[in-house]
Image (cartoon, one colour):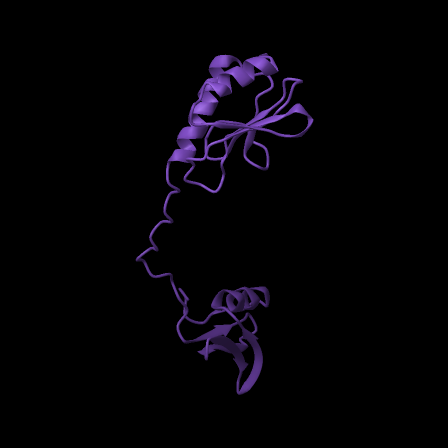
Amino acid sequence: MLTFEQKIQILDSYPQLERKNVSLGRVNYHFEGSLHEKKTVAYHLHPNGNGYVYGGLLQGYDVDAKGFVNIREFTEVELRGLVDASIASLSEPAPEAPAPSRKKAKRLPAESEWVNAKGEKLVLRAEDDLWYLYSGLSLEMAFDTPDEAKEYLAEEGFSPAVPGV
């Protein structure tokens, strides 16, 4: 295990990191060149040897809820590897969201008939951005989405009168 002083010496060797002394003798290191909202690379290095390095954008590290890796037991090689990887990950722009799929999702027709085992029929009809369920001329229910309507109909034992809907 590296001592607090050894960890500080290693982190001080990175010119792109800015040292920030915080409470209780702890030290943080910030990477102002980060292309992400996150700028803290090393967090709460403590004189007792504990401390954390940001690994939230990395694979293969055990990170806490904030994306930090506990470095208490790290060797110099492990610590340098993690710090290098952390800086590199913060130097890369955030990946863009994938383009929306050109495939159209399978949609219900504007009106579909549903039946149960007793032969009772219901009609599901799209009107004004809602989905209405009718029994004959009587309105039974209204739904925000076709998926809600399908789920309800399935729970009530109804299936599409025309398979594949």
